[in-house]
Amino acid sequence: MLSQLSVKNLAVVEKLDLSFESGMSTVTGETGAGKSIILQALNLALGHRSDSTLVRHGQDKAEVTAIFDVANQKKIQNYLQKQSLEEYGECILRRIISKDGRSKAFINNVNVPLSIMRGVGELLIDMHGQNEHQLLLRNKQQRDLLDIYAQNSELCDALNAVVSEYNAISNQIDELSSNQDLKQRQQEFLQYQLKELEDAEFTLDELNTIEYDFKTRANASNLIEKTTQVLNQLEQESGANAQLLNLTQILNQTLETDKKLTPIAQMLSSAQVQTQETIYELNNYLSSLSFDDQTTAELESRLSELHDLARKHSCQIVELITAKDEAAKTLKSINSTSTLLNNLQKQKKTLAQKYYKQTKVLSKIRVEKAGLLSNLVTESLQTLGMPGSMFKVALPKKTPGVYYNGDENINFLVKTNMGSDFKALKKIVSGGELSRISLAISVVSGDNEYTPTLIFDEVDVGISGAVAEVVGHKLKQLSKHYQIICITHLAQVAAFSHQHLHVQKVQKENGAETTVTQLSDNGRVDEIARILGGSTITDKARVAAEEMIKMSI
Image 1 (cartoon, rainbow, N blue to C red):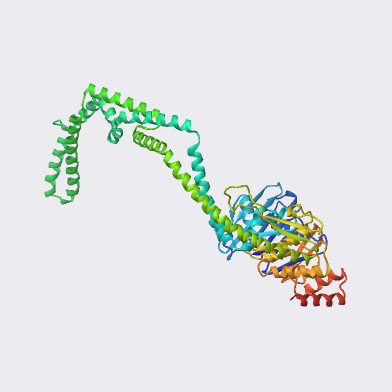
Image 2 (tube, rainbow, N blue to C red):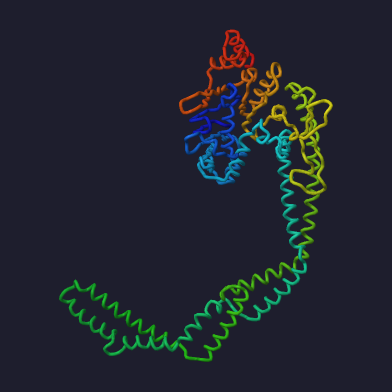
C-alpha cells in the first residue's frame, strides 16, 4: 500500500508531504484547488510521461517520492528481486524532472529505466479514471481478474509451463528441419575438415612443444656459442669458480680468529656451490643441443603444416585438438538429426495432448465463473447509477493452436442501455461510467493480490443522492481488500472515508500554491458541510454532515 507521498516544486506545489493510511482515503476541495496534483505526482512516480512545464516556476527541478509498504506483496517482491532491486518491506519510487525536460527514475535508490518503473507501478497501483491510466482496458488485466476471481492461478501456471516446453521443442524442431540442403553441404564440409585434421595425426604434446623445439634448434649455433662463452668464464683456471673456491678457503682460515665471519663465509661457500652447479647444468644443456639440419628442416615443415591447419580453423596451433573434437561433435549431431527429430515430434505430440487436457479443465471453470461474475457485476451496476446496464464476460475461442493462458480470449463487454448492443470496455467514452464499472468489478472480485492500491477519479461523475451513497458504501466495502484513494466532489462518498484529505489553493506573492491537509474529525464535519451547503457553512449543514458521517460507520 501507498504509505507516503512527498512532492517538491511540482506545478503549484512547493512542498508537500502526505501520509496515507490503509482503508479508504478521500480527497476533496473546491474546483480548481488542484486535487489532480496528487494524481499527477503519483503518475510521475509510477513512470509515466513527464513534462518540463510541471516544474514549478523559478525552480530547476521537481521531485516526487512515493513510498509503498510491500511486506505482504509477494508479486511485487518477486518482481523487484528479478530486477536486482533489494527491498526490505518497502518500495521507494523517486522521480526527478529537470526544467530542461530530462528526468531520472529511481527504485530503492537505484537508477532504473522508466520501463522498469512502470512495471513496478502496475503492480502497486491501479488507476481508475482517465482512460490512459486504466489497466482494466487491457485484455491481460481482464484475463487476470477473471482468473483471480475463479482462483485459476495454479492451473494457469501449470498450463503455461506446458506451453513453454511445447514452444521450446517446436523451435528446436523448426531449427533442425529448416535448410536441409544447407545441412547436407555442412555435413560434407565437416567430413572433409575432420579427415584433414585426423590425417595430420598430431598429439597434444606435439602441439604444446613444437614451436619451442623448432625455435631452439633453429638458434642452436647461437645458443652454443653464448653458453660456451659463459661456461669458459666459469671453468678456466682463473675463472669465477676457482676464485670463489680460493676465497672461501681463505675466509674459512679466519674463522679460528673471529667467529663473527661465519655467516659471511657460509654465503661465500654457498655462492661457490651454486657456481659449480651452474657449470654442471650448462654442460648438460650443451650436450642436449643439436646442429642436425635435417631434423630442423623436418620440424620447420611440420610447423608450417600445423600453422596452415590452424589458419583454416581460425585458431592457434594448440587449439587444433579442440577444433577436431568440435568438428566430430557437430558431425555426430548432424548425423543423428533424423533420430532426434522423431523423438522431438513424439514429445511435442505428448505435450499437445497434455495441453488440450488442461485447457479443457481451465475453460470449464472459466465459463462457469464468467457467468457468475457477469451476473454479480450487472447487479452491482444497477445500484451505481447505471440502470439498464449489463456486463458480460465473453470467452471467444482462439484459432486452433497451443497458447499461453489457454485457448480462449477473455473480453469484458458492457451495454449501458437496454436497447444497445454489448461493446468492449474501451468503446465506452465516459470516464465516470468506466470508473463505476471498474468499481463494480473490483467489489465483486475483491482480492488485493494483483494491485494493493486502487485510485478512483471521476467515479461519482453524473450521480448524486442515493446512488452517491451506494458508491461510497461500495468503496468502503472494497477498502477491506484494498487501499482505496478516491478523489470526489460528493459529500455522500467522502463521509465513508477512514482518512480525509483536503486540497486548498492559496495565493502568495510568488504565485498560487496548492496545499493538502489531513482533516481532523471536526475538520471533516466542516468540509462535508461545505460540500453540502456551499462556502457558507450553516448549523443545519453541519448537523447533516455529522449525521452522514455517523451513518457511514
